[in-house]
Length: 388
Image (tube, rainbow, N blue to C red; front, side, top):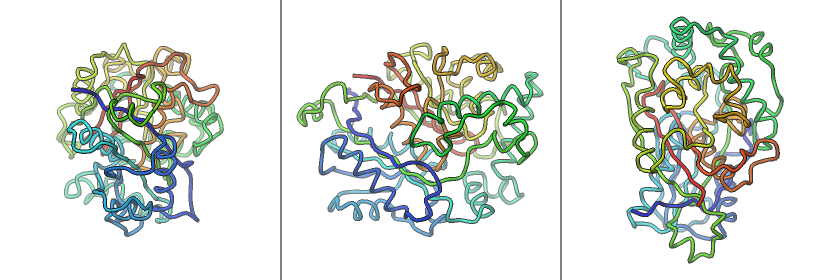
């Protein structure tokens, strides 16, 4: 079966967009992607979003954004998979093209989080947990990830300083990304001196709440040729999969294994005909530094318990063996939850086209991977992208 290709990408800078509405951000990213693809219409729209009903009291985003963009009477729908909504929306768009039902699909990821009070936003994010068994007892995502980080350090002998290298790497790359929320490098000392938000998680171990929108245009290779899209502007969605794990973290077989990521990666690798060793860079879901370590292990990049060692040894840098968060990741680019998976996709496309900003372009990149996590690992997408 022929794999779909991405022919256009667009995004807005991640930040606190007090004066811009969700719909305006989404339409700006969408029109940028359509302009990049050289098209003026699409057959359908998929919107990745986690909690617009809570954050801004607006649902029915498919209709809202398609209407605001002037796309006409096309099918448009919101895709929700918690913080993994963006990656899931990309996959739904790709499947529609592969099924032959639609020629040109637009995918937009968008979230506006900063209009809500921080305490309310924390609660809205926790809706992705098990409401009856976790949220009811006051277990926020920060708290749950703090427990994971403490167990990881105790089990494998790591320190807070060891895990801080993930944040340092992300900020070093984000500093060179004009779309990133944080454009300033940090040191390990910066991370260690930042205040605790849930011991042992510190402020600089966690991704920020923010606003943003990103978009991609997906079509078939045949249609892309008809449209006159140059081959070097096409990036193939070579393999992708999505899997779940128990939504209640306490029910996991292994608290330190992202089983859904492992399953999704194995399926995506098989579909793409690659292994972890063939991947030139990884955009993993580093909402918290410990999640970056667990993700590298689940994706087959590191052995179990060795993920943090890759950061400590500098192997995750742009010039390392396993570059990750090449444009800042969730930690420095920002984490507008439902949009994150689409931002990852846009960034992977730019890397594979050779269009990444100076200083953070992975040399001769041919295959990239994005991994987008919903919940504490309960709903995970893995996408493998390849230069055509």
